[in-house]
Amino acid sequence: MKQVLLHVKFQTHIVLRLFLLTVMPAFISYNTIAQKQSNGWKSLFNGKDLSNWGTYLRPSEAPADKQPIGLNKDPHGVFTVDNGMIHISGQDWGGMFTNESYSNYHLRFDVRFGEKKWAPRENVVADGGLLFHCSLPYDFGSTCWMRSLELQIQETDVADYHNVGAGIPEIQISKGKDGNDPVDQYDPSAPFQLTKNRVYRSTNFESPHGEWTKVDLVARGADAVFIVNGFVVNRIYNIYRTDLNEQTTSGQLQFQSEGAEHFLRDIQLRSIDFNVSKTPKLASNKNEIAINATPQQLQITNQGDAVELIGAELLGKNLEAFIVKLPAFPMVLAKGGKISIPVSVKPGYAATKVQLKLETVLGPVKNFSVLLSAQ
Image (cartoon, rainbow, N blue to C red; front, side):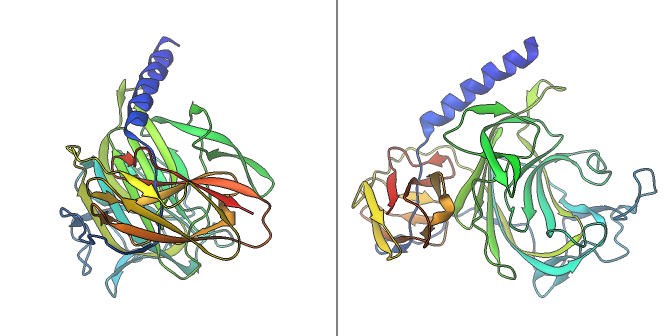
């Protein structure tokens, strides 16, 4: 009990410290923008082969005590390169992992779901996953995945959080619904809770089936942010290993094969620079915008130093009611630069309000938010 109390106390300190860094963002068409992307991106996939990646697999329907296929053996071609993409067939269960470990990074990649599914998941939603902060053994989770944390890659559920044994984080959670089933859901207005359970993303911002979805993971110390098509949908804080009495801040990366065909491309990573002395000052044309099915233009001007934006977050209930068309991230908004974002509301939704904030690799932009009011 004493250990748990110390953990909570330390987590609360970390959360308060992070909140002093933060506030959030969002947007869409742009005018005076320095569109140069930040330097430092490193491609983790060369588009030709799986150099610098290893694999570990087991048969999909094998009992836990059956002999695994094993390390760097892929007899069925689960992980292959096809036309500049990584093709994950899903036939056997396991993962492909980086040989290197990483900490304090921004990872981005594109994912698209295919059509083929394999037993025992041939009749359920297509599933995969990104495991991060991975460490040995290879067969820790379901006898085929490394000890890790998971950014879910499951169709209609991309960026749910799962625990695969790399530590217990603190997450802002409220009760939501998955169909008729009660679930834990990320809610930035809710209290922080320690949890080993699955935590659903705030809402679904994925692309339609057959199209590419852009996914970002920002791993900052023992915290992580999940971003889908430019929208922040999950945040976890102070990942902590009670068995080691320390935070989890680094590890390898692993993409899962879990019974469903999917494709990956443009896997890139860069280190996070914490030495930022500039101060952006974002201002919008309105603090509150009343919107309906006819798109309104949210105009944002940077009156301070240049800032790189990597995403946006909507905060509130019924987020799916709003249509917010974001620009391509990451993007640098220069001093004096302006962006214009079309916002509208889907038909049939009751009156509701959400806040829109903008995100950097170090957290939300300070002192900036816009209230979107659905009429």
